[in-house]
Length: 174
Image 1 (cartoon, rainbow, N blue to C red):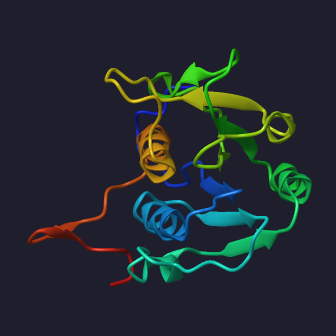
Image 2 (image 1 turned 90 degrees about the vertical axis):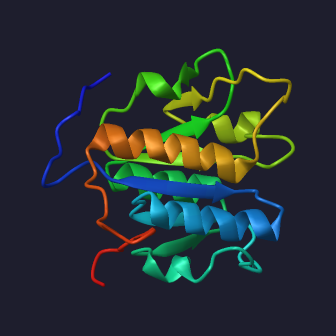
């Protein structure tokens, strides 16, 4: 674990990997969340046609959205771009996300809403994080989980908060 409590002019970057998501609303909400939390790029693996309900036009603010048909192709791209791939999944190797077990540029793999990340897909991951829960639910919505994990990464990476005007944040370049 690396302590990155001080803002850096070149902070580590994050990528959100959307794999095997079946709900169109979740896709749109994931795009909106990624944009709000400083994700530099999203990778969509598998299905390429989505109704982006819920994105509120924010996906256009992301630097790039790449599509890969197979997770192996996305993993190769990430490795060649010096990103580690962290699965958001409960398993024996997973660490709680609040321990900030990040080491640099990090891509986060979000699994299917019902089945999570398959064993085959987990094999591509370098490490895993999970979100501790305290209530009666068995899991979180994939967008909520992504938001929590990306927020922890943004804080760890020392991203600078956007300015606030009234009751809204002012996105960069506006």
